[in-house]
Image (cartoon, rainbow, N blue to C red; front, side, top):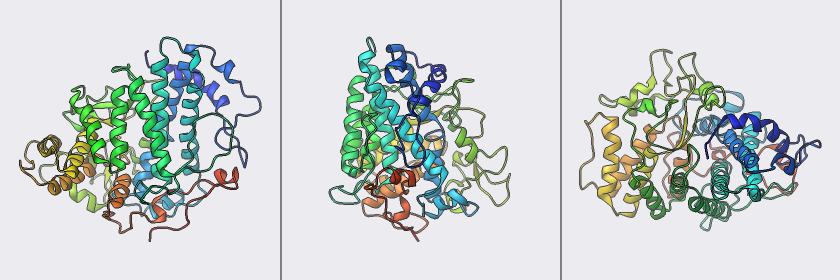
Length: 458
């Protein structure tokens, strides 16, 4: 089955009606307008079902998700940006005091759940599939898991906040039914994510023409287990992806965000000129060649990369806008947006191995593979390095490798749940301001919906 992004454009009009959102205090996430087409009219056969599935990727790669808002919000709430210039919604994110108001957050939240809606719409119409039923089911469950994972990381305290993870998570949506639902526990959310991904792992093919594969499901499982500090499972899944030998590290950093694609991409949002060009919000907030962007980095962060042999310093510009440090990796009119890729897997495998105090030679080689590219062959960690030294280096390299990609906040929370406060702005990992407040409209639809605690991190 060919992943044709042009099919997305044919489907948008249908889905805009089918998955339209109400306003005010009506059913906020999933109520179609009164003149909506019914599902039978929209999905009459396998071709229609495929179009709806393809449209879900428009959400995943669109501005509300990996097109830029996820990365921007995560970066503003973390500790690598200098956000003293930010105001309005952005000032609240950076100040770690997000309120129930704010269009940027609300639109992101609604948009993310539209991805879930479309995946559920596919799953409810699998009887329309014939030759591609398993593939389509696997894709839908992969997308549903991916979206729930990104939502729970932003809107709930992390795995480990309570001993049994009974603290409130997010709303799990497994159907398109217009029903009022309360928040599930974080354990229930992660259990559902893992269930969906294991189903996807079994249903998806080895190669899928740009669509998620079983390797994408395995890679996302590695990320999920790593976020849970479940290092054995994180190692196992990252190891399976790496040892498949299907992916190789890019020779240069320029290859990660290009239209031609990356050799290490396990799952990416593919740019197709004139049809679907993801990354608009990344360019809006981070792009630095056409003007000073909102997202600017701290001098302390830049000092970590500004060493004599680190080639990654070329990803930053400290000259064009005196007194400001900006990133250059998004300085292109269009590019593919990587979601799961080999660098992530190697850093997960390395740190997980060290946490397990097992397979240390493998972990050392993973770190050295990253360092060899980063320092042009001039730096490595020695054979026989201790687990603690491996962990320190894995975390350091991750902070530089994934800069501007929305990963750092997850690390602050994950490592905090292990008992280490690593936030460089001095906040405690579980302070109220490290999670977003649900939009007012969500609470307006359900008087029993429990919001996050008020407060900030300072």
